[in-house]
Picture 1 (cartoon, rainbow, N blue to C red):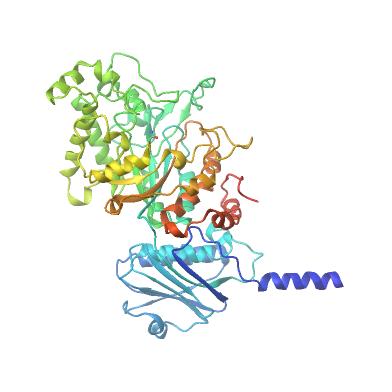
Picture 2: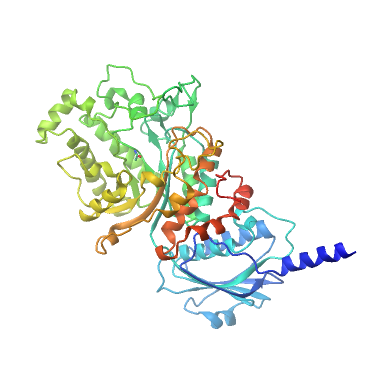
Amino acid sequence: MKKILFTLLCLFALTGMAQEISLIPQPAEMKVNEGKFLFRGKVVLCYPKIKDSGIDAVVDNFVDEMKAATGIKLKKDRFKNAKLSGLDVIMSCKKGDAHIVLSVDESLGDEAYSLSVSAKRIDITAAKPAGFFYAFQTLKQLMPRNVMAGVPDATIKEWSVPCVEIEDEPRFGWRGFMLDEGRHFYGKEEIKKILDVMAAYKMNRFHWHLTEDQGWRIEIKKYPKLTEVGAWRDSKVLGWGDVKPDGQRYGGYYTRKDVKEIVEYAKERFIEIVPEVDIPGHSQAAVASYPEFLACDPENKHEVWLWQGVSADVINVANPKAVQFAKDVIDELTEMFPFGYIHLGGDECPTSKWERNSECQALLKEIGSTNYRDLQIHFYKQLKEHIAQKPADKQRKLIFWNEVLHGNTAPLGDDITIMAWIGADRAAVDAAKRGMNTILSPQIPYYINRRQSKLETEPRSQGHGDETVERVYNYKPMNGVDAELQPKYMGVQANFWTEWVEEPSVVQYLMLPRLAAVAEAGWTPAEKRDYNDFVKRIQGEAVYYRLKGVDYGKHIFK
Ligand code: ACM
């Protein structure tokens, strides 16, 4: 009897306890108050009716997610006068037992929101749909993790949110993640999972590295062989050292229909997709598809590469058909991706084949240079001009890896964005000083495909396990940068290269939880970031990952 009483008391103590709060990323300002908002009876979600504002879609998704994960059916009620706030809104809302109230404050930033939870009401204020979306993400993170994971939990009988006051906005506008699917192809269900996890951490740019020496992964209507030939190779593993190609037919690509589906999925989560076609280097798969005009030596055999490394089989930038090819690919990418940016790569582009090619030699003379690196810049300039001639809604800004800053004598102009990876801090300063925008994706420690611990169980990948969660977390973006250069720093990005990673579960394992650490660097004010606190907050994420069906690195979980 005593034992039963003790158990009952414990259960009561547990349910009566203040709900654990562990938000990731940590909000800019948060005050935790006593008490909780209980979902009970008729809860009315009251929000302004603003034509074509995008708010309806955000609300509808939240209502659907709540129903799916908790069974709670929120009653939607749109009010006409969008200028109303606070009690005035309540007066114009339908009667209910409790309310969630959205109001517009145009003085807030596009991604900012405030969230006030009291025992009676949840008030959310934002200027734009993205702000409301992030407020709902925070609200879901304040509830048991099955809500963010979108999985029902029949054992939970009472749903509540702790009372908090949050004023939140991101430190940086660019909070990105790059996945290389050129080396290995994972498919759209995996991409959706990644987009979900990114959205949970309020990340907003998915940089999709779609082409490589080892595979071309996106259907381009005008050049069908890119996927008929370029998406397939005769080995799943990529050869390196003692590891030899395995002879297995391997590959895959995204059709236009797949891309449309993924674009819609990303848009719902306020994630812009940045497609990358890495040209003219890292292009052997394209060259193998159309050697007749892309190869510097069409007389030789070209195949999709079975090895790791940097191939010398680059596009012949002196062939007008190759330039036209690049323009056509950009046109199709522009159609498929209704976002702001296209990435054209630009890293690791050997010039050895150009040096031996008579067309390249002639073109170099024609542009008045003796530096073969200038051919690469000349190629990009033609693509930039092509884009500049498009109508406003088809304009796209270009991003390049930081190699394009150096080694050439004919710079590309300051209207490009530099993604800084090698010697990233210095490269970013260099770009900013030249008037270019820049994004920090330092190879060490933001290449989160590298091993994250020295544990024996760590999967095969690059590095020695030194890029731990702590190391990633403690990288300080824009540290010590002069105030006048800081506006050029758009944000941060984690990159994931897949030479060694054949399976999606290994992508997940290496990516998590380090992605959360990068997300926090992108969102949370520098002075509010604290690794020990992050370790405490991340513990519960193991539940989220398990419910979501994604693997994760275990070394910092207790
Ligand atoms: C890169 O890591 N080659 C951008």
